[in-house]
Image (tube, rainbow, N blue to C red; front, top):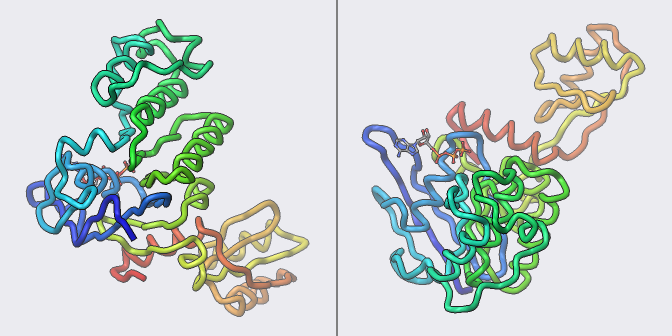
Amino acid sequence: MTTLVAADGVTKQFGAFTAVTDVSLSVAPGEIVGLLGSNGAGKTTLLRMLLGLEAATSGHVEVFGEAPADSDRHALGYVPQGLGLSQALSVRQNVEFVTATFSARSVPDLPPALAAVADEPVGRIGLGRQRQLAFHCALLHSPRLLVLDEPTSGVDPLARARLWDTIHAQADAGTGVLVTTHYMQEAEQCDRLVIMSRGRAVARGTVEDITASTRTAVVHAEDWAAAFAALDDAGLPVVLTGRTSRAAGTEPDVVRRVLEEAAVPAEVTEQPATLEETMVLIEQEARAGGHR
Ligand SMILES: Nc1ncnc2c1ncn2[C@@H]1O[C@H](COP(=O)(O)OP(=O)(O)OP(=O)(O)O)[C@@H](O)[C@H]1O
């Protein structure tokens, strides 16, 4: 399979601090790869190394089959967390600038939401529209690889769904997409995930691969508040979903015993863990020194 971008055992140190440790990752045409992890896990640093914006301390990076180079930018669409727009220029001027820099084509029409603010300085339009503009600019030159660092943070649900429609359309047309996100609903739309914790890749695969080995004990009790309180007091990792208590990675028998001791009648069953529950357990395991 052709690979658009590949990291092989990449490490990045900032002085004595290691932000990324021995991470490998690749993106092929048409696939959406999600990069997940808590704040400071090393996602942005990894993206920046893949884009050639940050040199790896060790390991190997290839973009379009070669070492990263400035010329890659003509086939790359990148939306950084800070969006990379010129705040003092208008919406239209930003588009003209990007078109002139990366593409020989004439400036295409703006989508209606951006056309309505075409002459406004970017610094004066809302964050949602700024994100839409950054996205629009990243796609102007029909990139082979799209790299998106939290593309929908601060965007309302409707605009988020629209941005994801665009991401899927790009992937369907053969563009490879590498995207970081904190939203589980977005992670579930990716073909593959790489989960990072403290600079390391601690889990990878499809959502099904990642959640397959994790089960959650599910508690239905008439006195649901007492059931939750008993499990919480016992130090179990319990969360309340509606009136149902869920304890991820906990044996149902352990839960039954706690509820019996607290004299709370309940039915305890087992279900596959959600991605979010699995992520919490992965993070705990990684902090305790192991990984999957
Ligand atoms: N230029 C730098 N100099 C020193 N430390 C840095 C530098 N860039 C990043 N770091 C540190 O590296 C770690 C990883 O940061 P990074 O931004 O890659 O994490 P992240 O997973 O993208 O986090 P977030 O989800 O908050 O964006 C953090 O502890 C950060 O403070």
